[in-house]
Image (cartoon, rainbow, N blue to C red; front, side):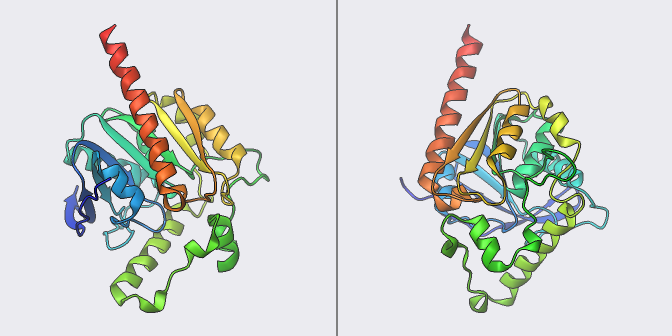
Length: 274
């Protein structure tokens, strides 16, 4: 597979908010919503998506070096903002992809409108409440030590190691702002919207929910419940991968997503010709 050149993020103003957006690849549009740690345009999984899609990957308001308006308080603000972004780019028949926290935002977007999207991919998505008040299916990441968090996040915990001493102040500021915003939007209730599960039924486009089989943040019961609430969904699992299957197993992840997009596109084309 040939590599797609990874460009530096551009400063873009959406609805009066200045954010950073990375665009790579060409073809059918794909809107990518990131997790806590943002976007690496050179990552193999992202390059694989960009080989056949025009990937638009915004740093969400408050993450990285994107502005966070003072009035932004909830996950709903991020969802409506992404709908504004989709209108700004005039997305049509686009694929919507969200990973972890970004999967939560993507689900909130699709609950509100799928007018510009025809397929949805949620990768180990946060965002719903499963079980009773005292049951926890999303691990409290802030209560874990760095070593325990790495063990929960990754099948191979060594992949989560980062050399912060080698980073410059600009990079470190972006990481600090991302983690602050991750907590700001998702702290209470912890990493979920209690009303979202009910409204997932409004997402009437084909959906793929991806789960890393070694994920220590979300258990299988949680992701099965998430997929079951979507009217047209399949659950795909990735072995030897934790909460970030796209990072740990990029080839398996790309194949899983590619098969889903081909199958559901072919089914839609067949339905329109009958």
